[in-house]
Image: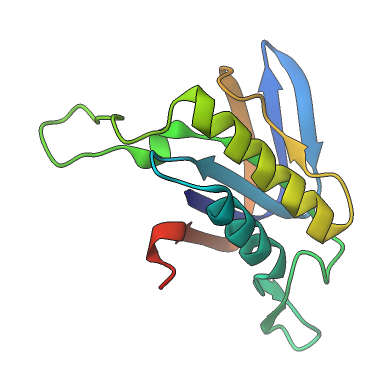
Length: 150
């Protein structure tokens, strides 16, 4: 699984012209599931997301997590994170997981983040045409791939 985590002052998801979900200060997370990903990947990434120290402490040092700051999380599924751009100019998505694998792992990631954070993680809708808006705070953007954890 691959995540793009952005520290935000606010973020939202609109679907069909209507607001589906929104958060204030916290993390906007794009979640990509690839073939071969496992529930262990989802749990490991959830733990990393909630504990990652990318918020400023009283001295202005990035030393606090989203849990420490009582921040929120907005998680949005994004199969294009698994695009291969090696050949030609049209990305290939052959390594992106199909719905049978991707939906349960995305849901598990969100559920685990909620459990670890102690509050609901806001979500997009898997497979929907979503308009995601955010204000990246910093900017701070972190990419994590569960296949690169060792």
